[in-house]
Image 1: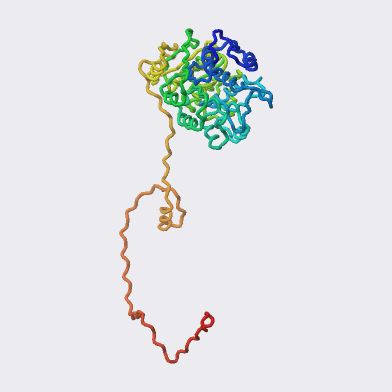
Image 2: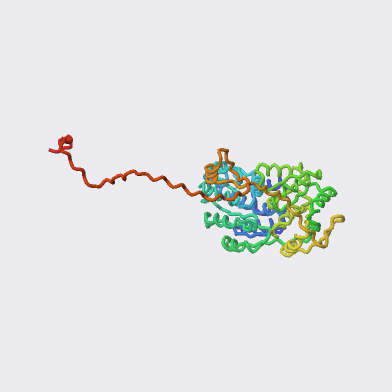
Length: 489
């Protein structure tokens, strides 16, 4: 039984020397509040429902204890180590996440903390958008940690590439997003394949009502951990009102006048991201787009450039609102408001991480006033709305801009095959166009009566009757067929 520690030190959790050495090499000195509350309960083997703010270290809160539980045990006499041998197609810890980027990030965290464990801990990240054959091939030897998106994991189950006889722990990270973004049915379908005897860990940043049915169905007498808000708010939230047609100009002014090293800008749609990149390029501001229409290698390259500091501005959809751990990101700007009030918390949570202060700016126009009021109410916020000189919003909302759609060309309707054939029969020898030509209607001429046929004096032909003809006396007889040919005697 693991007791709750008083001193915030990792070595008092009872971790192995290899894990403690990896923690030290990463640079962690003391556990965060969520780590100090969740790690002892996970080591006891209990189910956990933990809620914590983004950037509070909740990934390490479940990776470290699960890694310790999977690598402890009696020493194997044959192999000389304590780790259980994972068999073919088996999974020992399953982690389900909503986005591809989060699968990659958690996989990096697992490898970081398990790098000194001998034998090495197998970790595999699977997600859509890439060839599934490579994942099936790697699962033939089994894996200790499998981080997957729900849709791709169901494909692996249907391909019979994964088994659960050795499954120890099920982890759902970002539960609110998994349930609220259309993954609920897929998650429930996955749970049906899993064994009943397992440990379940749910981690979330918000507690919406949608997660209650899943919590009651899956968790067994869970330990509920809800992190209290910090006394000092690390994120400075600002709300700027502006006319809709001046949003881009205000954004360019903020980017030019502030010396932010990096900025993450959120839009509500994929096309909006691409359009905003072009508009900023016209103002000599270079930015990169990140959304679901980008190929996986393109998204990976964009994040790599941004994390390395080679790119200053990223314009992204809500795909970047979860799981992206960017060190010391100073500013997040909401160019468009999120559709869900819960996503607002995840968006601004990309800044103000690991004890470093950050800024979150929301640009709202007249048609977004009511929606932002709902966001404030749902998240318990009361922010001051302000404006920048030169970009003040009008008291009366200006008319919304009209979308310039190209007019449809008025072409002639295409004729059917029957109409073309009829025209060829009735018309001239000229080739008939498959399109109707506008012609003036000519008055229809009355149909001429057919001329009377001339009468003739031909005699009527007699109609033959069905009676047989009488045989003539001089008619020769037909030769009879020999009966013996047909087998008769």
